[in-house]
Length: 126
Image 1 (cartoon, rainbow, N blue to C red):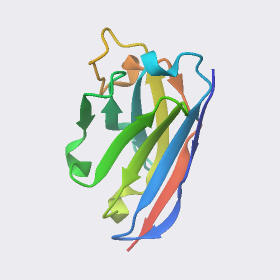
Image 2: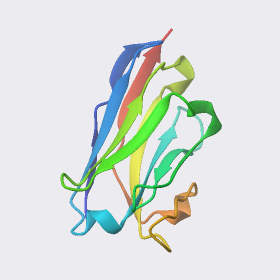
Image 3: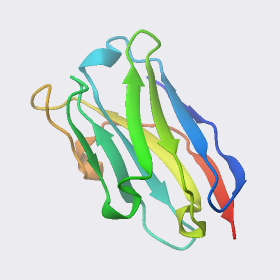
Image 4: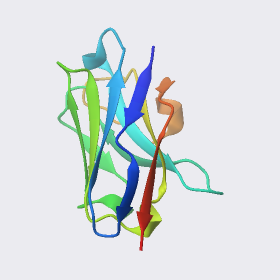
């Protein structure tokens, strides 16, 4: 099982980036997916989650209204559209996949996920 995150880079404050996470999961559509991030010297934190059904999402308060999580099951890919980026969004972003208790469940906790990508660095300059 492999999750490959990409799309990170250097962007000015106010700019946008779209992260992608390509999964080698055989049955991608049954997995709930999430994005986490880890800033230098800080613990990894939850950013966004999406249910396997695609009908439910959850976001940490600091990104609500700016970030959008989505998935394309035919391409086995998870996305994170990030708009109005701020310097405090600078971090390594990780995608994660987990088997949910039901198709509408989302998890904001690391323990809710079984597989993790390698991370992609997002740097937002002021």
